[in-house]
Each structure stands twice: as structure tokens, then as C-alpha cells.
Length: 435
Image (cartoon, rainbow, N blue to C red; front, side, top):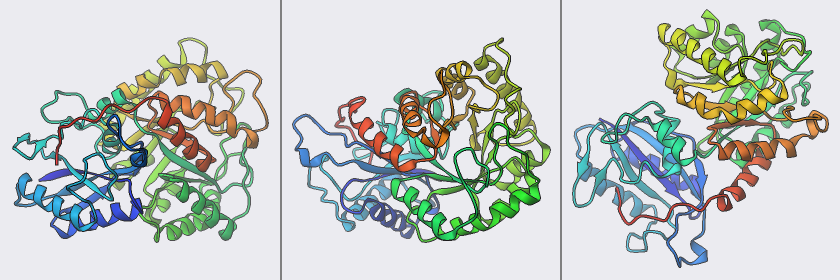
């Protein structure tokens, strides 16, 4: 039986509590556990709650396989785990706690007992549940709630963005880069991990306007050592971020996946037979970027008509048919509209406004806008554009973008944390419960 658990913590060492809860679930008999990325959200609090309860949660969803057990049996197991990990079950439901575990889904079953309602009665209302669930099973329908997918439900409550941090391994990147320095790389990775990065994206071929293409051999020469260093460095991290490689060459992608990368950020848009084969066979996640040319050629742009969003929706629908014909799983593909790759500033703004249309095609959306130009005048030089990037990022978060690819993760995570507390009050907590 495939089961989904929701885990949260807002007291003490939150990551340690979540890790301990996952280990306890495994010890209790949950098998093949796959944990989603963790997301942070403000606490849901009733009117009149003490200010000391206003502690943000770390949340994740875990998928597992359960054999020969009933949901009520696991409800008792969960309460025992929560107690062992320090939760006071007699305290108010809304008070801070080291761990909270809910049964979200139990296969395709619906369950109604005195103690349990499955699917969890609030599963369609909570962004901190739907966001991590959408990164495990975006195209799954919730039993008893029609044909809408998890991704569609998540879009209705505004997903919490995941952060993809950029690590340049090129000597000619438009935002900086240079020779491989293990100490400098480790420090950069540690900074991103401390900020809560979800994906670390390494690239060894600059695709900025005017850049020279490099061979797969040269790209791998630049990438191999930093990639090995990052993967080794993250082995000791708690609930570590995923590692992505930014490449359009199947040979490089395949080598990176063998080393341990879990995502390929493909600026060629999964347009080659080699990339589609890897995507089908690897089980990794893929980012398909729309690009008019690679590297970006300032002389080649989308025409003004039809509108850029229409062009990209048509492109995505055609590509989806090709991908499915080749046996690819769309649930493992994210779509990046390719800001800066053959779109002028007005087209970029049109694409920002049309992101829901890409999600409607059944894809999570990633936007790589960091330090690029999408407004008149262009602003300061690229390395100085983090304030402009941050302003756009918060607007994109409000529009429900699933993943934002940025250079300064710490700046963005801090700003988003504050923005999330004041942008829109969280829904009033319900008195119903799931587990």
C-alpha cells in the first residue's frame, strides 16, 4: 500500500526532529521512504494565541509502502512516535511541537473513523502540504475529490517556492565564475544549505548572450571536480538538497547522473534523442527550458506575433506529446520558459503573467530570471542585480511559481520568510483532524 505522511516541526532543532520522525516511521515498518523537499511556513494559529506560538514550521511529505496494516493501527504508531520525540499530546493542538505527523493518503482509499479521516480533511487547503506533495506526485488525483491533480490543487492555494541555487563552474559566466577552488565552493554550498536551498544547480557552459559554445569534453572537464566535491560535501547534510547539472549535452548529463546528480537542467528543452533516452531510463527529474538559441544569440528572438505565451504553450504541448511517445513521465519534468533565451523584455513580462497557462499543461514551473534584464533600461551590471531579482522573485512567488532559480539564495529565503508572514494571512485553523 502506498501511503503519504505529512510531517512538521516548529520547536527546537526542526530538521533533526523531522529526520528522527522519518527514522521512526521506517523502524515501525514503513518501507521505501521518499521524502519531499522541506518547506517553511508560518504557524496556523487561532485568534488570541500567545505570541510565543508564532514559530514557523518546517514541513515535508513522505511517501512510503506499508504492508498488512490498517490506518487505525498506524494512527496509534504515529501517536507513539510523536510522544517519544517530545510532543505533549495533552497540549493545545496549535501550540508549538517538536513533531507533528499526519496520514495524508492511504492508497486510493477513503477512511472515516472516530479518529481518522483520510484523505486528510485539510489536504486541499494547506499550501505547506500541497507544495511538498506536488514535488512527489504532481499529477496524482486526491481520492474522493474529483479529477483535479495535486498540482492543480496546489495552484489554488499558492505554492511555497523551492529555491534552486546557482553554482557557476565557467570562466565566462555573465554573473561571475572562475577556476575551481574547493574551499570557496564548500563555503558557497554551506551558505546555500544554511539558507534552505532545495536544489544546487552546477553549470559549466555559459549560455549568456555572446558566449562561445564548448564541447562536451571541455564541459565535463570543468564540471567533474566541482560536482564530485558538492556531492561529497552534501553527504553529511541533514535532509540535503538535490544536486542538478545545467547542461544540454547528453554525454555530460549521463556522467553527472552516474556520479549522483538527481536532476538535469536541460537548456535544449529535452529536444534530443539522447536526452529523452536519459530522462526515460534514469528516474531523475528534468528541467525543460525553452530557448530560441543556445548559447543565447541577441540576433535571434521570438517574433512579436503570435504572443510569446501562445508560442510557448504550443511548443510545450507538442513537446509533451513527443515526450510521452518516447515513454517519459511528465510528472518528472519541470518547465522553464527561458527568460533571456530569445525573448525581449516585454515578452519576458508577458511570460511572467502567463505562468498559470504552463501549469495548466500539467507541469511544475521553474523560472530562471536571476540577474537578467526584463525591464526598460536594463538596470546595473549583472552581478549587481540581486535587488531587481528579489523584487521579481516575490512577485513570482505570489503567482505560484514552484521553483525559483537564483544566485543569492540566502537573500531570497530571508525576504520570502518575511513576505510570507505578511503578504496574506494564513487560513484560520480548522478543528477537524486527520491523524
